[in-house]
Length: 261
Picture (cartoon, rainbow, N blue to C red):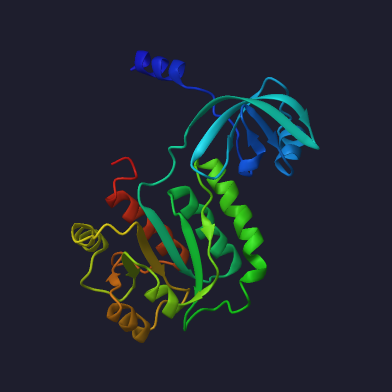
């Protein structure tokens, strides 16, 4: 056991800081790191010339960069390696999440980005508690998913879609769509998702539609069923909305073989 541990430790590379930058920041073998990342590198992390970082251009490619100039106004480096980023699921997961109280919605964004969600679409349903406009919060949401994507070794930043209605959330998905509901008794998520995958026509997206703090009204669930959404149970316990979102995403990704399967 000790020999195994020593070998694993010897093979382990140091974890490099990761930063998303605009694609135009990388030209040939030179990376120019703009603000605010440059300030973080110089003033917060206190990196120096010769240190290595990973830079991502949000296209699924990552670049290993050796820093050559470090200043809070701008950071430059030499690209020494380029490779596909391996943190993206093979299937695109879109989470339609009813608006929640600010801290709970942000928790969903952070954790579901870490898990592998590709896009988030906020919506309002009958029992949504939060009614103020979501548009003023989109910039903060984008910062949250960007930081979570960097931390979790994602190759792309999840998209924050414009807020939609429940009707649009139900009618929008072109592929498999599931809706967790606390009063569902017949459709277990595992059985339902595997059946859906067996019948799949190859559509690239898989949508998960999660309700607000008060859950979905029965007529909303009926409307979803009429439009082909598969209503599922997440078990016998009642979950908070943010827990339901994280649980549903985790379970779907597990069945897709994305969580070490």
